[in-house]
Structure formats: structure tokens, C-alpha cells
Image (cartoon, rainbow, N blue to C red; front, side, top):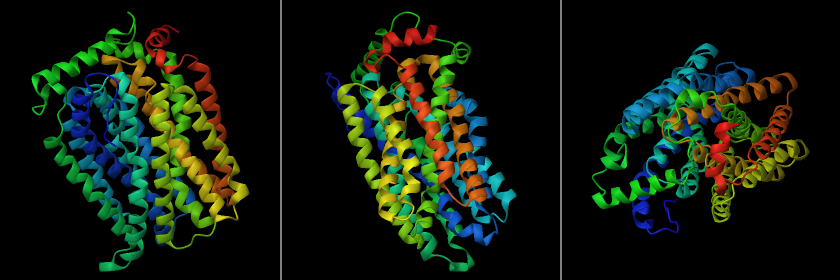
Length: 444
């Protein structure tokens, strides 16, 4: 997971950097994603306890991303100013505390408010980490590093699925608390501990790292400078935020990310419900099957990421995986009476969407530099995350109205396919030619 090998003479120093910072932020993202999607398991109990329906759940799941979108850009700009240590302290302690508070939900309105606040608390985590990695790794290494970081998501499923199922089935009724209340309590505490630990484990930039020698710091600085020097004059090296926000291509990339986030959340929030719908009735069984899907996902994205790195090709890898996800969503109704075939399609969809997520971020980070990076990355993630709010609302509302998950999932599949066609159209230049393309991107 933490091998940062490449072909240059500075493999050793970047391997050392990866071993120091990647495991910690990886664990943070595992906990982050478990806390984000554990409501998908909790709903299997609390909808009945609180007398709510799937439409309410869809709105609650989406409210997270309303808060996320509103606070995403200011949070990432603040992270660029105060550093990752203080940022993770603020974000993780708040989201851990709010996850714990979800155990006290008593109705739709309190659920909406806490999910909104959870999204506001988490805003800036993912783009902040992506920005942080640009301070430590040059472009030629960043694709594999980001893929390693995004592998936390399927690992969160491997751990979170069985863990959530076991907590809810094993502790239901203990000390007078429902299983879903124990779920939020137990899974919220690690985020608080990791937020406090970030101040001691991480350094904001290579120049601050006492565990690096002066020569190693110089090697990192030289590698980063070399990457910037390869860009032509006029690229985004020192572009002001206002100029980045005025570039229409940023919004096209955001729209593509919107379609990706729609599919990502459809998988993250609705797998437990879909498995129950096709005949898996026990919560613990749903948890273990979800974990198995995540194991396959982790293997798949590693293989796809390595193949993409070897070929130094991003465009068709992203689009191909996206089309596979869209096809899986459209085929799901045909497997409604087969658990095995449904699981097979969910594996394809899960591998595809997380491969898209990891490889997509090699594209904007190749185009955005310096002061442009914080604002550009945050803008793309904030606008894209609106899809996170729309996706559960759309699927939940359509399920309440039609009794089926498949209509909403099919609509998301079509939207994702359109997003991939747009990607192929806008990025006609292979990523290995990203430096010249960055100048074109800035001036189109």
C-alpha cells in the first residue's frame, strides 16, 4: 500500500515520505468513510424505530452533502493557510463528536440537522488531503499515491460492513440502547482520537519535517520544482483563485465529478438496502457480503491503478471504468431474483467507481498549481459533491414512489455515462502530455 516507487534516483526519499504520512491519512480516510456511510446500515433499524421512510433517509443522507458543499471551498482555503495538522484536528474531532450525537436522533428534523452539521464538519477533508499530497509528491508519483489513499474507501467497506452488522446485531438492546445507537457511538470515537493524534504525527510541509535530513528536503524540493519547470509559461503555476474560478473548464470537470459522486453515493448508501431487497435478510449477512464486495474492490482498483501508471494513460481508464459502472446499474433489474448475480454486478460497479475516483484526481492535479490548486480542487469537489446530495434523495424518493431502487439507479447510470462521454470530449490529450495541455486548458 505504501510503496511510492518510480524510475528516478530519488525513490528512497519518496518511499520514506510515503511510509511516514500515507498510513496515517489512510486510516483517517477509512474512519471518515465509515462514519459517512454507516447511516446506510443504521437505517435498517432506525427507520422502523423512528417511524420514518426511505424518502426521509434519502434526504438525510443528502443533507450531509449540503453542509459539505457550503463549507468546502472556505475549509480548503483555510487548510492551505493553517496547515493539515490543525485542519485534521478541527475536522476529525468535530465529525467524530457529531457521529456520536446521531445516537440521540428522535425524528426526521434532528436527523437532518445532524447530518447537515456532519457534512459541514467534514468539508475540506478529501480536497485538503489531495492538496497536502501536492506538497510532498511530484506529478509523476501522485497517481499511485492518490490511488493508495483512495484504497481507504474499499477498506472502509471491508472493515465497516462486518463491523456495522456485528455491532447492530450483537449489541441491540444492551444497556437499553438500540443497535443503531451503539453503531454511531462506537464508530464516532476513533475520529476524535485520530484528530488529536494528527498534531503529533504529521508535518505541514517537507521543510517542517524533522525526520527528513537537509539533503532529503532538498531532493523533494528539487523534484517538485522540476515538475513545475516542465510546464510552459502561462500554465497554472501561480494563477490567482479568481482566474481559476473564471475558467469554464473547471466547471466542466466539476460536472463530470458530479456524475461520479452520484454513482459513488448510490453504491455507498444503498448496497445494504439492495441486498436486503434481493433476499439477504440478516443484518450480519448483509455486513459480510458488503465486506466481500469491498475486498474485490480493493484488489480491482490496485490492478487498474497499476495498469494506468504503467501506460501513463488516465483518460480511457477513467472512462472505461465509468461505462462499466453505468452498465451495471442498468443491468441490475435483470438480476433482481438472484443474489449471486446482483452481488457480481455490485462488484463490477464498486470496482469501477472507486477506480474512477482515484484516477480522476490525477487529472485536475496535473493542471492546477500553486495558489490555483487549493481553490481549483475545492471548487471541483464542492460542485461535484452536490451530486452526493442529489443521489440519495433521487433514489430514496423514487423508491418511495415506485417501490423499486432500480429506476433511480438507472437514471444515475445514464448520467454517469454522459459524464464519461464529456470526459473523453474535453480531455482529448493523453495525461502524459498534461503539461502542454495545462496551458491549453487555461486559455480555452
